[in-house]
Length: 610
Image 1 (cartoon, rainbow, N blue to C red):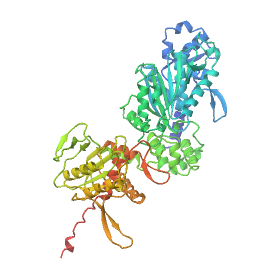
Image 2 (image 1 turned 180 degrees about the vertical axis):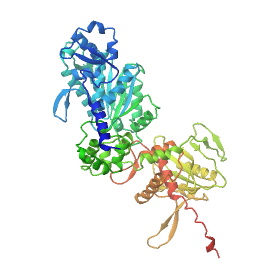
Image 3 (image 1 turned 90 degrees about the horizontal axis):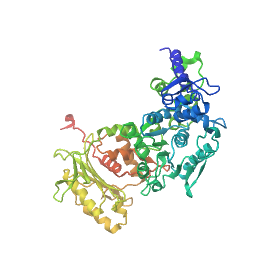
Image 4 (image 1 turned 60 degrees about the vertical axis):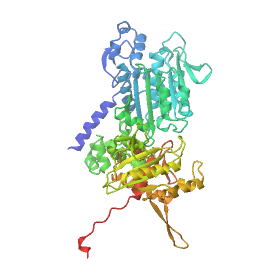
């Protein structure tokens, strides 16, 4: 390959894409046709086909003002460049909204859906500040100010300040809107004013359209509202608690918007680790199991991210590529100038991971390098390939026989085999439905353990102990490993003198896991039932789990287990915990079982036998 010639070819493609003039329609989205225009200084323009086919078009061909107003209705990019002023931080001044390549990339999907008569549904993964929020809010303003009357919108931020900033953007748009382009007889100029005394609702004067502000902390505020357009920003940072969840907010909003043409639901966010609501919705969209189209804008789409490379040194620079830079060239088809920018900018960051979290090249990189995940998402994804539906759902009766129940707490993927040894691990949660879950997981013992069964629910601890022993008996008297902190210290209102007998009762089980305890004064060795988790032992558990996931060291069957693996994080103080609003009960049973798993017996060398 001639590197210099290939790079020139890529540069030509890149430069062609950069050719953009929204006033003349050059490089603008959608199918277009070239026409003569009545506008002074614009002899010809590429206008949307829909405008040329509009029945009003023949009547406006020679009227510049009417022609412009009709084009506004068909051409968002022309309207934005003509009517919207924004502040450009990089140059420190105001100017017309000329869409950058990232914004045009997103707009092409929005307009494809709208022009096709479909409801607009997108989820946007943001990488760096390229104006996603500006685009969506302005696009919805176009619909309300130009296309539709009696069309209400809602802007929802992860906090109040984010929502207020969006409203400020719209108020600025109205204040600087060119008077000659305001096409309505109902008011002399565009204006946002309070509606019915509400501090969170504004009315667009003359359009009978309302703009509502909301936050993820107040999901019920949008329930029952008459909404057609919804912009949800920084969704990955929405709070997730018993009182407020992103799911509840989305139910409230989606329930207020008809699934018809002319409506918009746009979710956008930077990545905030994996396993949260935004990440799950992104995965659903990528897998085409969602009504939303996923859109990601890589840093390579931003034109200023290029540095000079002398032609005479092109081959030398190419030969110096490391593995990651080689991937940028081969897989992502970047130019030498873009890769040089990447190399130069990388030097100002403490690590490649930190840099790529801010400038990801694809969606996997964006999610995997954001947040503080303990387990790499790619490895969890690989582990999840063996996930499947259980062959049985129900519970064990008092006589230790299976009783099917679609709402049962016991899931079985493999029934016990008399020639197989098993290990059962129990993580104890609370008794109330709102408390942490109690989980009992059963794995095979051997070189490559398999998850074969799992019980998950809430139960009084003495009954939970009986359930664990029952499941253990069912699986050939499996080794029973109990995370004993709760029982030893008392939790969820259970007194110590109540919990300790539970452990004593479990000692009757024939195959209970016991930990070694050495008295530092007398040196006497005793054994206590259960696994006691502290900072040191938890580190051992999680280190073992990390290795098992990395090396595909066991077979996972449960979807929720993979979800917990994704949302497990290392805190700033070094401790491990589930992300806020997530669980780690299932994960801990895997960690306990794999750590306590008996080592395989060493084969006997016949030469050593007397």
